[in-house]
Image (cartoon, rainbow, N blue to C red):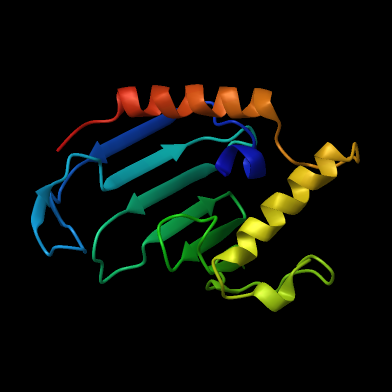
Length: 166
């Protein structure tokens, strides 16, 4: 997500940890071992020189599951989601210039192609599928292609390799 919106970061640091070592099988109620990371925090410097940070948190939370903060020299953006995966989350975007407080940002007119799906997990996915369809129809769009997916996978692997466990 960050690479598509801001460009590929030039430097990243990561902390990756598994803090919850058990999960519950919802069918049986049985506790089972969990080894997948439930905390992933990444910071980096996109091409424009800003500092960007993302923190994915899994499990039962009392805090915001998805937080993406972008701080530049003259402003800040904060994107939050009600679930940890932004493609399924109801996202809130806030911004501020200079020393102003963060406040909600309105979408530009016509930006939301599927307003009837707003607030549902299908909302963001519908936009992703629409971009894929535009690409398949040969229309000019900003959808990332397979080559971008390969590079993103390599970046994620590099970040995971540099991340520290806990």
